[in-house]
Image (cartoon, rainbow, N blue to C red; front, side, top):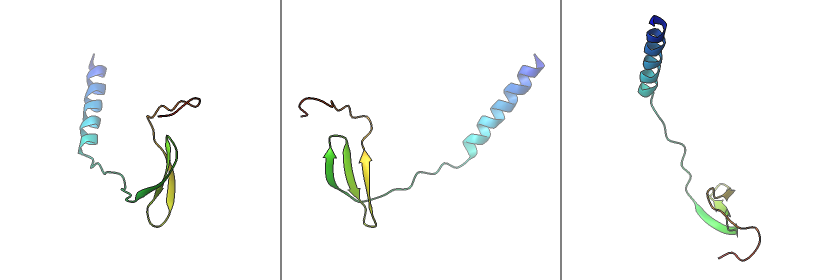
Length: 67
């Protein structure tokens, strides 16, 4: 029973300490979409270069008409 309290106390302190750690947002990148290669892939230009981005969460049928 005592071991459970020690482990619970340690985990509580660990979670509390993690909450005090500062959270930083990711880097932002500003630019514009210069080309649409398919329904879920676009080319993004940001000045110093460009990326081909795949949009996650879009379900695209591989065969048949695409609206």
